[in-house]
Image 1 (cartoon, helix red, strand yellow):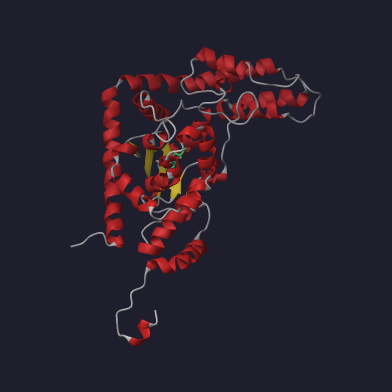
Image 2 (cartoon, rainbow, N blue to C red; image 1 turned 45 degrees about the horizontal axis):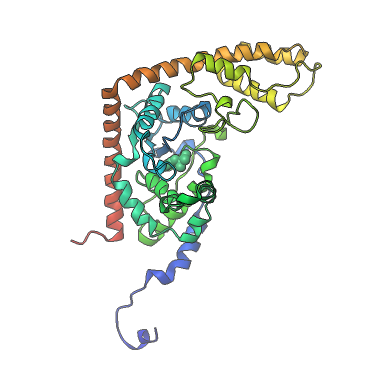
Length: 372
Ligand code: TRP
C-alpha cells in the first residue's frame, strides 16, 4: 500500500476491500416489501412463480391465481411454472410432464390469459441459468444456510441436502431479476426469499451498476386471504391433509363430502355469542364462493341462535361445487387439447426470452463481460 505514495502507478481498487461498504450502502436503501403504489405503477413489471409439485387448491386460487388475473390487466406480467425448482425436492421426473401440463391448464381455466401475460416454463428460458450462476457468486454460504426453507427441507430430506436446495433462493432471484420485475405476487411463506432477492439485487447493483429494481411482494390492498383448511388446523395445502383441502380438480361428490366433514362446534349457541374458530372458518369459506344474500341469511341465523350447521355446510358444499366444477371441467377440456397447451407455452417462452435476453445484455455489459 505504501508504494502508492512513492510511485505514480495507476491506483486500482480491488472491489473485495470495499465489500463492507457495499453492504452498508445496500442495506441503507433496502426498503422492505414494496407496497403497490398505484400512482407510480407505470412500466412496473410483475413476476410470479409456482412449483408444479401438487394439485392446485382453493388456497392457491384465492391467494395467488386470483391476483394474477387482476394483475394481468394492469401490468406487464410474467407467470412461470418453476419446474427446475421442483427438482430440488422431487428428483423423480416421471410425473413432471403431466404435473406441468395440469398446472398450466388449471391457470388457464382459472382465467389467466396468454394474450395478456407471458405464461411459461422455467426450463425453457436458458438465460435463467446464466443469471443464476452469476448471482451465485454474490450469495454467501452463511446466509444461504440460514434460510428457513433450506433448514426445513434438509430436516425433511436429510439424504438429499443438495446444492440446488441451498441455492434455491438464488435461482428464485434469477427468475425475478431476469425480467427486472418490481412486484412479486406471493404469500407470507415467500417473504424471506424475497428479502434475499432484494439483497442479491442490491449487491449486484452496487458492485456492477444499477440495473435491477428492488423486487417486493405484491398484495392487492394488503389483504391476503388465507384459506383455512376444513379441519381447522392451519391452511389448505398442496400435499398434506388432503381431506381438509379443496382441490380445483376435486369432483362434485368429494367436494360435498369434504365440506360436510368440516369441523363445527356443538351447534346453535344462544343469541349474541361469538363465533368459534371453526365457525369463523366456515363463514370465511362462504364469503369466497357464496352469494351475499346467502351469507347474510346464515349470519342472521347465527346471531339469532337458530343456525343449523348441517344446513350451512350443505349450502356451502353446493356453492363450492358451483365454483369449482366449471374450472375443473375447463381444465379437463384444455388438457385434451395438447396443441393449444403447447402453443401457449411456446408463446409465453418467446415473450419471456425476449425480456430475459434484454436483461442479460445489460448484465454482461455492466459486468464488463463484453470483451470487444
Ligand atoms: N419458491 C416459490 C414457491 O415455492 C416458487 C417460485 C420460484 C417463485 N420462482 C419464483 C415465486 C419467482 C415467485 C417468483 O412458491
